[in-house]
Image (cartoon, rainbow, N blue to C red; front, side, top):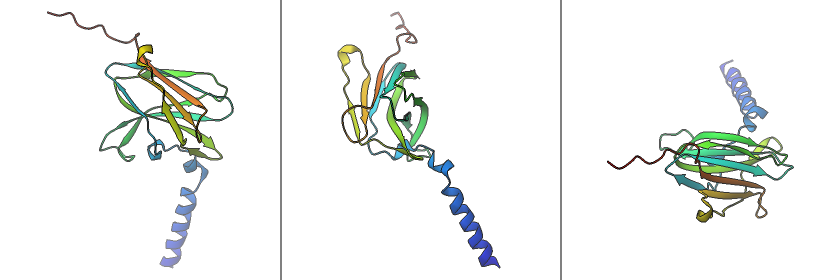
Length: 156
């Protein structure tokens, strides 16, 4: 009887773990490429995707005590599949930015990432993500947030 109860419990647990609810959760810390950028002041970002595919951008920070292989997800946004830009703000710090796309019931890491940052344009980062290579299907531009930036303290 105990053996039967053990196997029925194990089967129920296996079915629960294989359910679509678990498949729908993105796991960006498992992606091989995790582009990184940092800035000592607050930042603003804009992400755009080419129409047609569902994408989500994740911003993570590394912490040795974090549950996900040392990464904490600090911000995430759905990127419009209609090509409309989404934006937001990030506090000063070092971030790993990963864009995942949806295929079936799973979130997939792109095989291509590239940073086209141009410091002359005031860019902190200008990332490109593609499924298997160019073209860029998602672009993430990060700049200093001049609206939230605090002026330097006057010298004594």
